[in-house]
Length: 332
Ligand code: SAM
Image 1 (cartoon, rainbow, N blue to C red):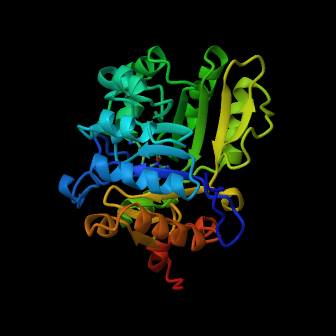
Image 2 (cartoon, rainbow, N blue to C red):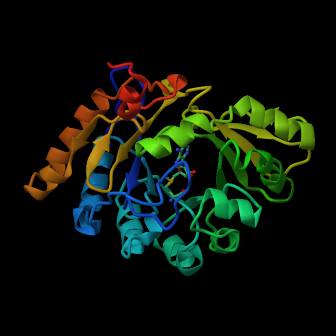
């Protein structure tokens, strides 16, 4: 098997996030607008067979870990087939999924049987009214049923992702963190990043709650957070444990504590373009190569080229992704 590829800065890039669709059954305030969203038709998305081709090519150049995401990945009618195809590619070490959990009661057992190892479930509050305010189309009861389904299907360790949004849920970090006292879950708090369409990016930029504030709020209510050594240096979450807790509290701080230096990720959009960084909009088209009969070698060559050009870091400390640079009249 090939050694893990390194980018131009010596970072080992072995982790590919694959978006299965850009459609979603939620409209979180910092992610998607309620109206006017231009979504691609499903026919534009890579098919299950094409995704398998990309994964084979990625493994051939040294990628080992894969995460299926979106949009909402469980909205793909062929999501179980996709997991099965990805999981059985020789050399794939890990297949995980990021989801809002709503469809897990129907799917968790089949996904686990198909080879899915773990899920990250997105939940911003334990208060049903605030879930409806921040995640809009979803309900706490639906997401909670998804969490229970993931547990029963053995998708472990269960990780919960909560985006902390000023004016919406900054107080809710305490009950969310307290879940780790009883459960061996990882509850991770994420700073808002200015992504997507302009109005939503602006919400994310102005609603930022720095990790230091979230952390202080949790410690004031629940006690000191003891830092845990990083099991994986590329893990974007800084992990801690509350006194006598079973689970882990993590902080993902792309704005106030960027972790670009250890970033090992690349992203494939649902339409088959590699993004070199979540927060830069440089991209490399792989669908055209696949559909013109390029096959595994062409995709592998594109991937290696993309890895070499992975940027050093994003500029979220300035509150922007490349897409929104013009918003701040910075140019460049
Ligand atoms: N639909 C799935 C979900 O809700 O988890 C997967 C896709 S969602 C885009 C992946 C993760 O991105 C979620 O955990 C969500 O919390 C996070 N996210 C979305 N928009 C964000 C933003 N503007 N800033 C920070 N995190 C964001």
